Amino acid sequence: MYKQKKKNHPFQCKKKKKKKKKKKKKIKLLFNYFLFFNFIITTFSDDKQLGFILFHYFKIIEVIIKDN
Image 1 (tube, helix red, strand yellow):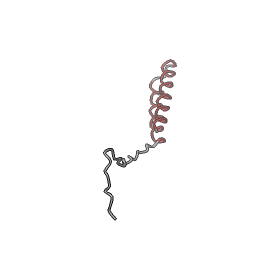
Image 2 (tube, helix red, strand yellow; image 1 turned 30 degrees about the vertical axis):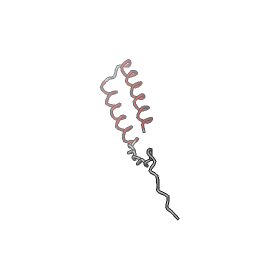
Image 3 (cartoon, helix red, strand yellow; image 1 turned 90 degrees about the vertical axis):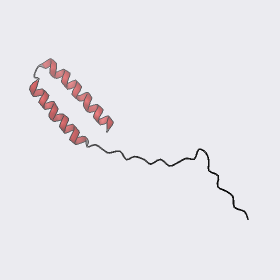
Image 4 (cartoon, helix red, strand yellow; image 1 turned 180 degrees about the vertical axis):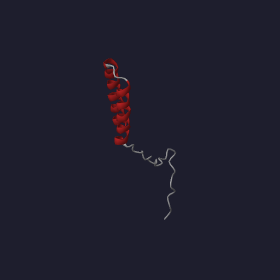
């Protein structure tokens, strides 16, 4: 019996190592933003500014939650 030679395929697939993603703590992040938000409310008490800031604050939170 003769042994068959193993052919090295030119496009040999190497197994890629999967990188582990670090999970960020959502609760801690949200709490920090909540504190930041309270600070903003105390500093800017005008109605027009408050509405504008509120809108942006919730947009930021949405982005953070989607990322995590």
